[in-house]
Amino acid sequence: MTRGELYARYRQLVDDELPRRARAGRWVVTADHCFGRILLDHAVGGRWYDVLDRRRSPASAQLDDDHLAAAVALAERVLAEGDPLLRELDAQSLAWRRKPAKR
Image 1 (cartoon, rainbow, N blue to C red):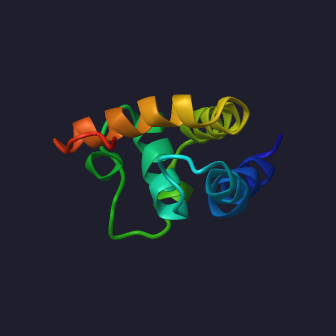
Image 2: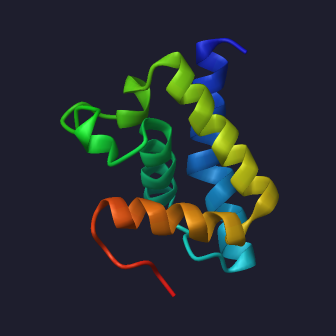
């Protein structure tokens, strides 16, 4: 997959497929920006804004090829595994921000 194709897949997953599936399944996270936060955090291994420039939008475009591929792979896993995996990933993302996990 080219970088352009990989990035297009990332956007499709974050902007459309994951939120749609999440709403239908009543997952813990349903908003596209929350999926973006979770995937970016896990791609860089911490709060994405500690690694990427939060003033340059979109942050996802700043990911290098390896991090972008990791974000897409993780998004595909979430699509396949659903809410249980998403809850774990969201809890870790929130912990990096020193916020409590959702119930």
